[in-house]
Length: 565
Image 1 (cartoon, one colour):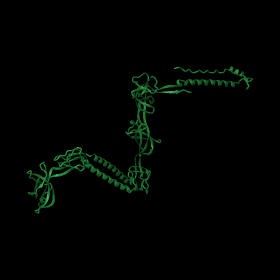
Image 2 (cartoon, helix red, strand yellow; image 1 turned 90 degrees about the vertical axis):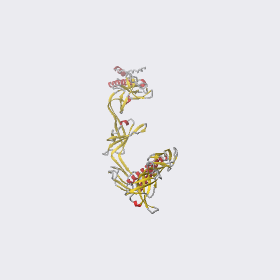
Image 3 (cartoon, helix red, strand yellow; image 1 turned 90 degrees about the horizontal axis):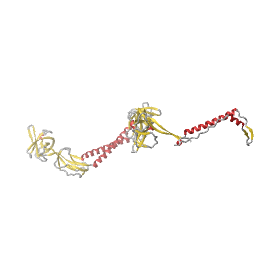
Image 4 (spheres, helix red, strand yellow; image 1 turned 180 degrees about the vertical axis):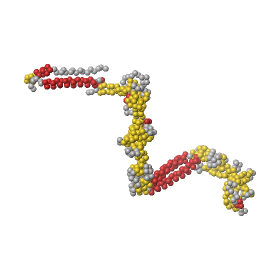
């Protein structure tokens, strides 16, 4: 590079006394240029004045030449490489922001139906305790709304109960043990309608026999009494039990008066309906016979029918099949019925919510304070109509305040419930505690922010509610760690498309220097990119966890100075 040499200024010689004398001898010309004679001799005062002017001129010229020399350089300016040294220090990372204060507990009482305020028992600003009467309102509509809402709920509850019982038929099962008869042939895919009878189920585990006896033995036959049942077809006698006695009055052709008794006998699988049988009983050592023999019947018989509309999935219906109680016989796909059940359940839930609102509104017509606190809003005026659009009374417990704030994605990992927080509201200082940090966020300008709740004791009432407040908390702190200025740490791109956090180390190329770094800024010669792991940071410095050691000199920036002129 060619060096630009600066011109050397010639310094003027100091005026000598002989020169002053020559000036004294110089001729003086008049304005027309004619000689007028010689200049009169200078006084000592005038000589000193001329000497001082000469000296001042020399100094000015010297200073001007010196400044030009200082700021001259390539391109009219100079550059300087700024470095820093890795050293041990302390870092305190803080999170700051602002939020909105509100009472931790606050209740607003509103009347949603027309009415007239009758009495008001409190004033705005008054401290109240839970249960303190607030006001009364006359609202007939509120009572009517509760009755209507309750009736609607009861209607949906009945519909739901009925449909739930019907849906039990999706798995049509035997309600008791017995034998299937008169079954309907069903195949998968067959449509089936609600109310379709698919079989008759006869409970043949026991048989029933009705017998008539003379009134002469009234009172001698009782429920639970044992009897002997004769079955001529089987030429056997079985033990039965009197289940029920009916004191009816049957008159025979012979003029005898009879009462009836229902006899039950256990069936071991050999008895069938319509078999002839008779039951005798011993009374006071005497055998009492019925007026006539009777016919055995199944203990009970019922129809199995579908309770839903749908499509048959499977069927196990077979004539004379012995089944047990609860055994599933037909599977039905009742999609429409399930949709109807879901719809009714939703309607019932909504109706219950409306009933709850109506009951709460009616209770508010004779309102009492729901919490301890201060009346911070009061619009109820005795004799005036109710304003259904705004609360009549608002009560807040201002002794305990919460602050709704946010913390950004860079710092949210450092903020935990229980973290102490410094608070400042118009120079009123307080200390709070992080109560919760939400796991969900909202994104603003590309930055995710997480809702945070801070609680603070306000027993003295120094913090104003429903107002902004500034917060500051220590996110992380390290009192003995390697640190560097933030400007010394860079995020660079690598040729493979990945990125790395690096510092540029001065000296010979280190073994851990990165290859294939995409350089997008001017890096001085003699500095090499080394990957580092960083930790917390504050406004100026960043923690270096690994990658370089104490005393390492790293590149920070190039500082430029512009030339004058």
